[in-house]
Amino acid sequence: MKNILYVGIDDTDSSEGMCTTYIGALVMDELKHYGFQLKGHPRLIRLNPFAPFKTRGNGAISFNLSLNSGKDAKKAKKLILNRVENLSELQHKNTNPGVVFYDGIITPELETYSMTTVQKIVTIENAQKLAVQVGAQFHKFKNGRGIIGALAAIGYPLEDRTYELLAYRIPENYGKKRKINYKSVLEMNQKTYPQTFDNLDEDEDYIAIEPHTPCPILYGIRGETPEAVIKAHGILKTCETIERIVVYATNQHTDNHLLKIDHISQMDKCKCYIAQGFVENSPKTIEGGHVIFNLKDDSGSIDCAAYEPTKGFRDVVKNLKDGDLLKVYGGIGNKGSLNLEKIHVLKLAKVYESRNPICECGKRMKSAGKNKGYKCMNCGFKLRYGTKNLIEVKRNIKKGFYEVPPAARRHLSKPLIRK
Image 1 (cartoon, helix red, strand yellow):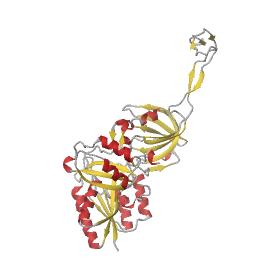
Image 2 (cartoon, helix red, strand yellow):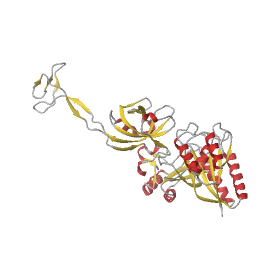
Image 3 (cartoon, one colour):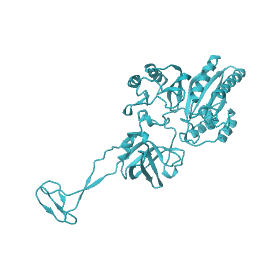
Image 4 (cartoon, one colour):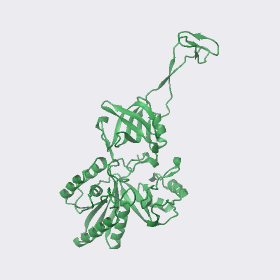
């Protein structure tokens, strides 16, 4: 009977280049070349998007190997470790790769730990302690922070999952402008949406499958099934060579990073939440084009922000008024405000404005001067002691869900099309 070896890898890249998914792709292809068999799809697990030491998307990868013997395991581990060491951006101070090998049962403790890495902050010591407890073998390069994500990628319970097909560039094109045929992206989206999603933002003329960093990825297609993303890839056209592709099973776009809480006072920095409350101050636009409002409940309040990159979503937020009841979805960074990913307008407050009284002839009257009442400019009638009328104003927003556009969506945020 063959044994299963779980392999987890994380923190190999930097803000200037490389990608853990690409190192994983190279490692898996080399293992196949030497006759090793991979079981199922490799996994791309996105961790807490507000973790302070993340590079870009904070993603770790894992895959499973079918092994015949301990000799096979030793050979595979050596190959993997050599590749990670040679390809990682070790020259950068914040790149601290970690590799984890595990051949046991995925325990409830492992699953709980993995969910914690997505929703909270986990230390290297936490990861080491659990690895020793379950009998996992870990390897640290430099301070080895990557073992946190590597272990999480192995143990994560992918109950709700999506898939991402990643196409990689040839090395000589790294850092150059990507050459993706825009019309083919439109065609791909028309033929595969909503089985694939977040392909583009037509309002902003933005190709959402295209990274904007010097990493090896040419594009990434997200979808509900492996078949959907492979079909989309077949439609897409590029004007540059694709080196290889990999389809990852992933927790992207599942909202699994969000903690449901009962009170706003329970919120902390570097975590993501679903919270409910009332708009306390009508939204205002601040320098940079960001839109801010205050959300409150009986326990406290927090500033909620629709930042400039959320584009048209800000126009929705601007229409909120004092007393509106909302459910908000988002994360808290170091500034302490909640970065909005989407909102659910549960109840709209009634808004009134003061209007001059209407004359008996049917026309609205004008003020006759301070403390002089009102005068009709149509028939001349005067109203000495009249008062303004309160008129309910029709709101420019309805109850329901509103979300940021694909261009501004975080990897873990679930688009409304998936609900």
